Length: 370
Picture 1 (tube, rainbow, N blue to C red):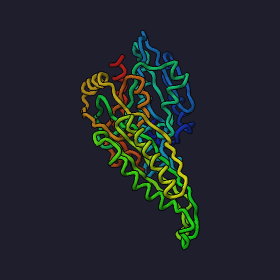
Picture 2: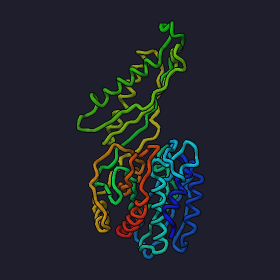
Picture 3: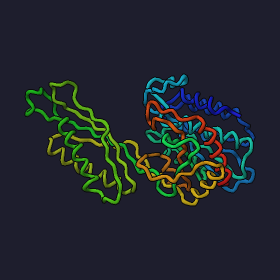
Picture 4: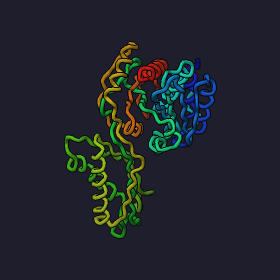
């Protein structure tokens, strides 16, 4: 059987961004080739991989999805096996997700279930979003599962703890990019310019009114601007400015209300500040909504393994696995990995003892759902 720690460390060293996971795809294929091939069929889609374990008496297909891309973050873990790709890191645990999927796949390759099992190694979860185009592909629909589930590491939870809930787990999310174009000029002659730093700054303040005054207080929403760019030097008024942020809501229709209000504000600002404003929503992710009955079955698996079950709370986290659950029954769960640093942090260090727990949980759940 493969050494899960070695595989995780190999994958950790080669993080790649969405739809550029070429080394990752080849590494995964190489590992999969070492498994017994009698029951395995493999398809590739872009930089992703689909592996079906043929069932002995198939009536349905049970799917498990693992995301495979990294993040544009410079690693600061100090690992002897840290990223060899400068400015890129597996800072969201996808090296864990892939390794756990491989471990469960290997076990099923040796001892298949009656039904088909499908392992989906999905690219571009962090952006621009791989789930939706993958689901629309010929390759996926040829083996489309009847049930699908996935996991995500949880740095804040101890090893041996598993957490999820029926119903809403993660929010609807959208990226937000707003570009302002005006007229630059000398700082001594502001009346001859259209200052886009001023316009963008005022726009940020206006955005805060959307959640506080345009959204039902009983429907949660977040609009955050995390990055602002404008100007080049202290004595020149900026001709351009750019805001980058995120929108998150618990109800699918609420995100549309937020966007419509942003667009209304933009039209008003174009008149008030005599400028042009363009808006790009980037990647949009649908909510992760777990199927109650299947979560109940999963809870039985967790307890039977002697693991600690923790009921999760809904979070404003985003995950494109929500697109799978929009059309296919299933769920996502948190796997405790006990790291002092959280997701998307340059010093994230998940405890590798969680790897075998993840492998067994995934394998046992597939067998339970069959």
